[in-house]
Image (cartoon, rainbow, N blue to C red; front, side):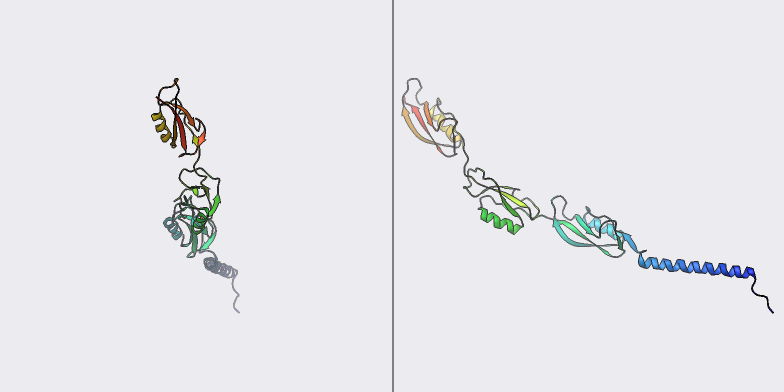
Length: 239
């Protein structure tokens, strides 16, 4: 009758079995890790980068850049990444894509000066803006009721959906009439024109206290306000 396995042989067999079991476990776990999470990467933050830099950054992580759209922005240069999905710091599978929104060019504000409010409303709606009517302002050449000013000015790149403030013309404003009495007629006529008024009727009177051709009186009086282009009547001293 043969003797059974020795104690040393049993211990050796157990050790070898444990080593093999551990190796198989490590191998299986490694494969499972590759399948479930070992191929995952942390999504980098590409917001603020231009399209080329963002693409290279993602490519180095095994991700692909996809442009999901463009959005006008006044603060970011055209082509800059404004937002991204998935968000920075999240986990994504290597080889998957990351969708970004790039800054695009904001539409240009149309020129509204000289147009009616109805015309301006149509133009702004077509450009994607809203209209806001402000207080009337005086204007020397634009007829009353038509647009004399706008904020922001024409040609400005502005985000769609924002309001453009328009200010209708209130017609020519008023300015002070210059002092003409005591001035020689020829000089008074020139000053009237220089100030934007026109010479009205000239009447003659006589006063021994004044030199000939000096202005004795004026209408409107000095300091009164009148619209540019209105007439100023004078009374001049005879010889």
